[in-house]
Length: 155
Ligand SMILES: Cc1cc2nc3c(=O)[nH]c(=O)nc-3n(C[C@H](O)[C@H](O)[C@H](O)COP(=O)(O)O)c2cc1C
Image (cartoon, rainbow, N blue to C red; front, side, top):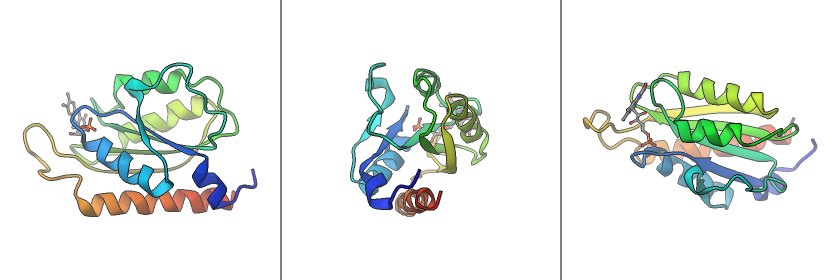
């Protein structure tokens, strides 16, 4: 798909699932960078049309080394999305990528081409990782989003 960065920017959507707000912060940083709104999957109906979307950013916290049940259900409800690209992001207490890889596999199961994954630590209820994600994480997330746009330009 020959798409310029500017075009794709206006045709990207950011979806997230969050329980304590950590992944929402990252989603909003990415959405700001893409000039769009971050959408919480809990408020997105089954009929949400992706007809104008070429690049989906999809993010969740890690729950038992997996994305949240809400995010998994959202991805399963996407239907066949052959030809679309996705980039996966999230926050976790431990920093492992297992939940990101599972989101990637779910998206690939719907026909999407996953072009990148990015995660950072998130503060836990116990206050482990206090203050995370922090300002640097938000900047890094925006950098990740820009990199994804550039990547899609050369696909
Ligand atoms: C019930 C529960 C299970 C969790 N399981 C994991 C886990 O398996 N691995 C991990 O790294 N973090 C785990 N965490 C930490 C969260 O992934 C982390 O705090 C994340 O930033 C939460 O993101 P959210 O607020 O956007 O949902 C868990 C947190 C809770 C409350």
